[in-house]
Length: 239
Image 1 (cartoon, rainbow, N blue to C red):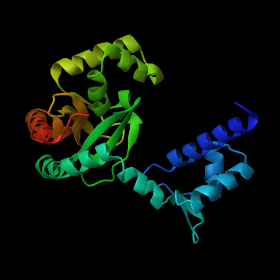
Image 2: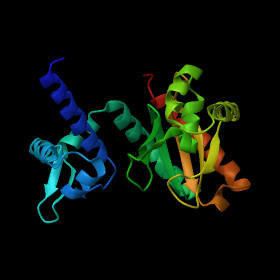
Image 3: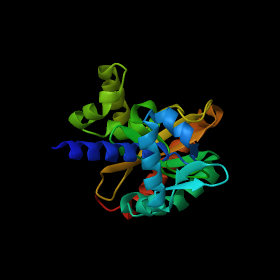
């Protein structure tokens, strides 16, 4: 690789990092905020932001001077058919669960070591968390083979052997539960969502106040989530 090739790779990596920075729903940042968060030289950052804006990946609000994702990012997102089809198929089911359980309901998939919400009731999808930190991610990690799971857990700072044991327990019992890493003071219960071949492709979960997910409420939530997962499975084609 010659010097110009290395410079091009660095620019590409920085451009992708900028787009990832704006991937949080509603994220809008000034040039100064982007510079402080990423620590890139201001001269090169100016050029990268200008190029991304000119190409439609970012937009600049002339009134607030804040950057946010542009239309090209949306076009690329909706072109990713697996997530779009899962969202389209799951949304009516999530709305019914939301009414039945009086909680936030979401479908989450695994992306490397992260759990990403692709569909949510009453909230924007797209939230991303380290998979091991929440019930949805634990469901997804629990159904990986040991080698793949260890690749995902490379970023986990805890005791890996203990986590493996906990994930085996989650897989055996068929659900995961715990404090929500997103909504303070709330609990989450998650179950696996399988395609029609029986492969786990996502987790479906409800997040609510702890009192709603105890005793009979917990049993109701598990029954409703499992019923929803069974109803969705026939519509989910194998990868």
